[in-house]
Image 1 (cartoon, helix red, strand yellow):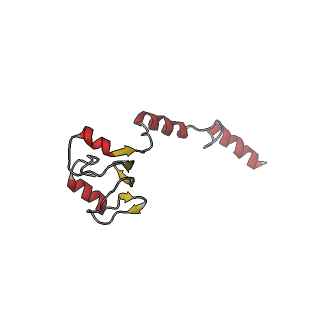
Image 2 (cartoon, one colour):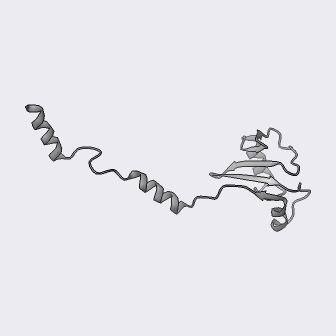
Image 3 (cartoon, helix red, strand yellow):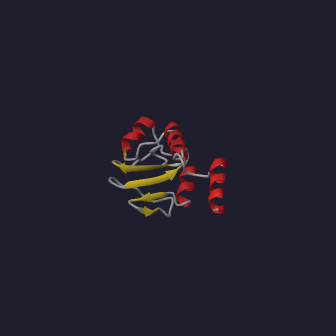
Length: 116
């Protein structure tokens, strides 16, 4: 993960692995020294997102970001922007007319029906 510049530092990569946020081909990575070979699928959960990467070549040393991106293919689902999340959150909060708590007028009508 460090060679491919997926995370910023080796210590962050180690923290993710020890926290159980990294999987290789579906199985949880236990050791920070786990080897990744070509065609392995790496799943990383961090910062409210999930990254799914298929490795094409193993990294030998940390190089420029442009070269690091050639080592893997990104299969991650597209990110949902905050703007779309706000629209969805507001859409679920809208009530249908007539649902929810009754108005004062409706409560009075209900009380009149109970008296009969």
